[in-house]
Length: 95
Length: 262
Image (cartoon, rainbow over all chains, first blue to last red):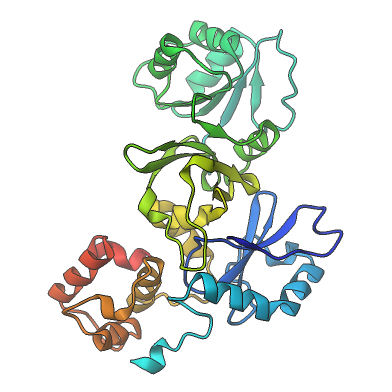
């Protein structure tokens, strides 16, 4: 099932969401912050924004902090959903 | 990015259209002017009276215009819509559309083409047809909706669009709209690639992204060894041999020239 990280108030009521869906762009592993018609991808390896648009500064600091506090849970969730491309990929070490 | 948006609503129609970012046209002159000034536009016709107003206003030849008709249309009226527009989106049996308020917001969004407003499941041909905010269609094979061992399987009998057009929901299974567009629309993919910060822009980086998107491992490219695939992905091979490229492309289900666009 798609994973939705519960966000603290008032951001949940304002429609902010943080999701890892069952079918995402696979590489790199990420969590998507959704708000209305906008989405921001956060790299689960580096905790950095993956895209320059929409403007990352539009995401409330508290939402990012909450994601940082739950990074282990998000990484585990990604690995469960995308075992072929885990957050700590050992591919290069393997070949 | 999207074509201009016009709403045709006769004077007598008092519904709330404030969330639509497009121009509201209420008489023959306004419709005629808008139609003549644009070779291609998106139209929203709110009901049969609006369709009649549109049909009375324009002379249609080889149209590139697209329409969202907000009422169910019987067969003959559908034929009229198809005669007037290149693309017709309308409520019908099995067609799922966003709730009206979200529909208005998505249609009026500057990135409407990158959002989905609805769609319909074709179980016989095992395809999901989705409508984008620019009223273009995308056809997605059921097989694309892959699930992991620990995830749910997509339920095509429970299709809906959520998150203001950013997520396709199939029962408990959810797919990201941007993942759909990345795989099925090269122009959308190009736009997404331009927005990426610090992504590996080499051929090897593209190959790695596409391989993982397809759920393949490096050992899935026989007779090419996993070691060779790894070397190509790390850009240690300057230019893969044509035969190697052809084998890789065939396994990925794309043209060799398209790999670098991923």
